[in-house]
Image 1 (tube, rainbow, N blue to C red):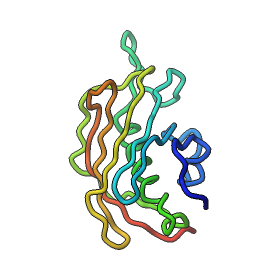
Image 2: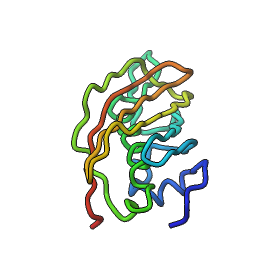
Image 3: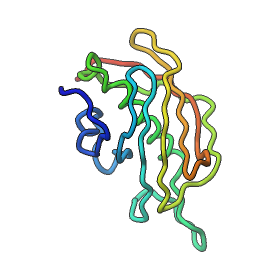
Length: 149
């Protein structure tokens, strides 16, 4: 696979992680430092099928979907490394995930994920999702790498 050329669009992201529509939740990768950090973008659209809608209230992106978007950005960070490109990443735990404020249609969510620890096939990442410089969600995720099927 060729080296990464930023920004990564939806098509380039599909070459790194196995997720596909409607479960691919990352629209673009704007920054990438191997084994260190990554920044991705999730655009919240009104026609996303998983928006939580209540009568009289503005639709919101559920925290579980936002947590998955952060996990996908972290997966891109790990799987974009040349020696990991033929592997699968498994989320084995999330810790201290805090949902700070809702994300609504029209929001552009910037997701930054930093490596906290890498040891062999295991690691821990810390992710922060922001919109308009306000933290929407943050937390830690533990992952394991495994062989592709």
